[in-house]
Amino acid sequence: MLNAESDIVFFPNIRTIYGAIAVFSFTLYPYVYMVARVAFMNISPSLIEASKLLGKNSISTFFYLLIPLIRPAIIAGIALVAMETLSDFGAVQHFAIPTFTTGIFRTWTGLYDLNTALQLSTILLTVIFCFFAIEKNSRNKIRYDNSTTLKNSYKPIQLKKFHNVAALLICLIPVFVGFFLPVLELINWSSQIENIFSSKVIIAASNTLYISIIATILICLITLIINFIVRSFGMSQLINDILSLGYAVPGLILAVGITRMFTSIDSLLINFDTFITGSILGLILAYVIKTYAISNNVLNSAYASIPLSLDESAKTLGTGRLSILKSVHIPMLKTGLFTSFLLVMAELIKELPATLILRPFNFDTLAVSVYLLASEERMFEAAFPGLMIIIFGLIPIYFLNKLILSKNG
Amino acid sequence: MGRTNKFLDIKNINLSFDNKDLEIMILRNLSLTVKEGDFVAITGASGSGKTSLLRVICGLEIPKEGEIILDHSVMFNKEISIPTEKRNIGLVIQEKVLFPHMNTRQNIEFGISKRKDKNELSNEIMEKLKIQKLSEKYPYQLSGGESQRVALARSIVMKPKLLLLDEPFSGLDTKLKTKIYPEIKSILNDNKITCLMVTHDLTEVKALADKLFNLESGKLVKI
Image (cartoon, rainbow over all chains, first blue to last red; front, side, top):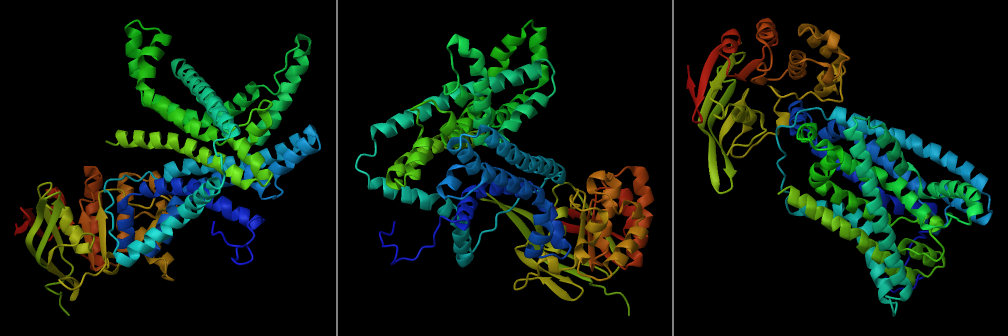
């Protein structure tokens, strides 16, 4: 970006394990930031006042009261980061860091040894589920720790000149390094390509939108139906809990599992001259498993906010279950359905490992294009599809923000 | 040495809040003196500024004008504003403010964590307030009365110069209140703690207070 020769401007070699750690830290910090922020906001200001009345100044209050108080949230965030890092494939592959995911990929696609790949996947899955359990446990603790009543509201402190600038700069560091800097570099690289809207990019973009939209609609529909059945028949949430486990499974492991399952089904279908391996079906199945939790989180809470008495009233008026779904639930779940659609869509647009393995022949998405071009060191060509992923991902976030703002009046 | 007549000396306090373009006066030229070791009660209608007065005294609200002197030290005037944590004033309020992730002992020892004798001090106060059995319990395991006793213990263990009570017993049932009043009075007397309490409950005033004031339109009237 500086247009300087590498021997003139010193820059440390980023393609090392430390470089990867830095990249993961700056890109995954929102997982900790978001949960910690919510946890901080849920702390009653009266507790902070109580600490000051007990002789603790702001710094002591922060370290001795606030940090221990939000510790479960920090642990939950860190567990999520650990799960994401262990599941990551694209970044570690690009950085040439030997990890479980790259090992599974090499064993399978290089050595054609599906059994060893499955064994490695099982070990990785066990480690990930340990972090999953830690995350779940910490989340339960957050609810219990924040049981203090919240009566007062926080009074923002207006920082003076130097402190104001210093606070702004410190807070900007992770956003700048993790978002603006790479985006600026992608824009810079893209500007050096003559025809950025090549047919390959357009096809990859339309493939991305096509598969993401179809899968998202399907996921929202499945979540709606399951939540409707659970509610209407008074079933336990166990089915939702089980299906939600899918988000913890790395895309690569899902791909290995689905391929194994589909090859078994294909061997049964061989007499009918039909094959499902390599079809779009596997990809959609992987997407459903991977993002059911996201969709369910939204729709399940939206459903919980509809009083059961409404269903009972509708029943006393002679309305059947399906009519209740159509005329009571769906109109009341509109916002939830839309939110769920946007969140799942934002997630699927950037999905790489499962897409890379399960996509039908010659079906490249933007994420796959970026991966393939970057692995051939064609960084300038990879930049624009990368930018498009960011833009496509930001569109749902924009609408989501608008939705939240309109809700908050 | 006799008791200081002006242990707490509050002079001409003015407190107002800005609400959009409107300035709402909460306390107008409020003055009050409290003798060392006295238990003073303040009553008043809801919204009369009772809680604000306590928050001003302990430094959680900063008044526009006035002076607050505690035990001959200036806590607040035009030039000085001592931060809350350095005033050595305790405040117990009705709201549950026990730290939810700490058990009773940890809550009580929070303010004296750097003292070597913190264990003895917390044992002593727990014994006085009859809450030894609760030492390992967490706030969510305590009843309303137990929580208030722990909050009181947490403040008293600091040996504050002044203890402020903001309707601390309003959530408790009458039976428990009548049981707790003499115990608290005796603990405050034993520790020679000067106390200022705001309340609606006249039974509470009769049981605990030496003097009573009524707060009307931001000013104190002695009853």
